[in-house]
Amino acid sequence: MKRNWKETWAKCTDKELDALAVLRVMECTNGIIQYAYRDSLPYALSVDETRTAMKFSMSSIKNLEIPLGDVTLKFEGDLADAMREVRDLYVQGMKHNDDEAYAEFMVCSATSAQAVGLNRIQDAVAILNVHASHSFPRGTPAWGMEYLMQFLP
Image (cartoon, rainbow, N blue to C red):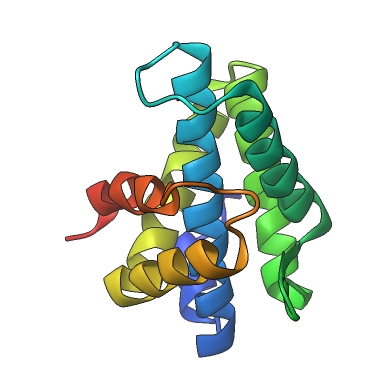
C-alpha cells in the first residue's frame, strides 16, 4: 500500500517542517549541481566544489542529520522513517529505472514542497547560505529553491 504523503507531512511539527525545508533545498541544490557538472553547463561548479556539495548532501541524507555550524538538524521517529522510504523510492526510481517508484518519489517531492511552503523554503536558502556555505558556494541554494517552485501553487 502506498503511503499518503500529504498526511505524512501534515503530521509534522513546525520544527520538523523547518528541517524538511532545509533538506529539500539541500538535496535539490545538490541535484542541480550534479547535473550542471555532468552536462558541462556554463554555470557548473568545479569538480572539487561539486564533490564537496555531493558529499555534504549525501552524508546528510544517509545519516538523517544536517550539520549547520553549532546546530544539527536531526530527523527522528516517523519523519526519519518517511525519509528512508523517500530515499528508497529515489534509488529504485533513478538508479534502477523503476518508473512506478520514480512516480511515487515525485509525489513525495511535490507534496513535501507544498507542505513546507514558500516561506520555509526561503528560510532554508538563507540557512544554507550562512551555515553550509562551505558545501554550497556562490548562492547555489537558490537553485534548489527555484527547482522547488514548480511544486508550489
